[in-house]
Length: 189
Image 1 (cartoon, one colour):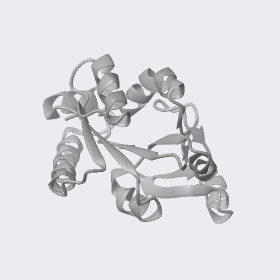
Image 2 (cartoon, one colour):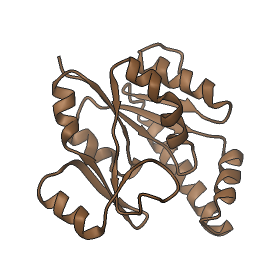
Image 3 (cartoon, one colour):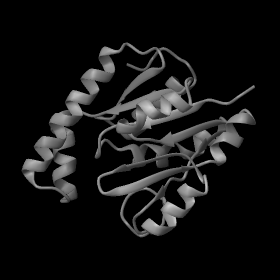
Image 4 (tube, rainbow, N blue to C red):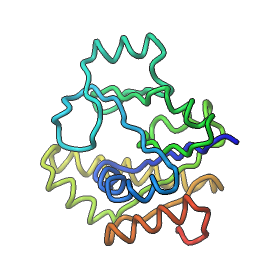
């Protein structure tokens, strides 16, 4: 029996990395693997524990078929190692920190993908983005508007393979919501 690809998406600042870190042990107990992405940024950069590579190294890995999925966003290149195909074939669930912009391509390659959309209250997200200090106030406003449009479009599809998790409150509550969704419980909203 094949495993499930679980594709976690959400706006920058929604807390995807924090959620994955907080849920890591409990996901492992369920036999779910969290994929370590390959990203063209320094491994010491703040954020997820990704494998940092140069643009040249990324291009070589991509040309050699080293990625099951790859995309470009925010001036960086992202890759999901092709090992996930072996894990899925072996019956393991695999959780990927994905890209909202790459969702359509992911669905083409993995038609049965289970999508988790992590949301957060717009005011809280605004504060988180301001606190990071990576973007101007105008850039943050533009990002928030794009996020809202994307979520509206995605939710309008009424996709049964999509679950929404709200990360506006306590992180432990968000972990419980995510695990319930993965376990197929109808408690995620």
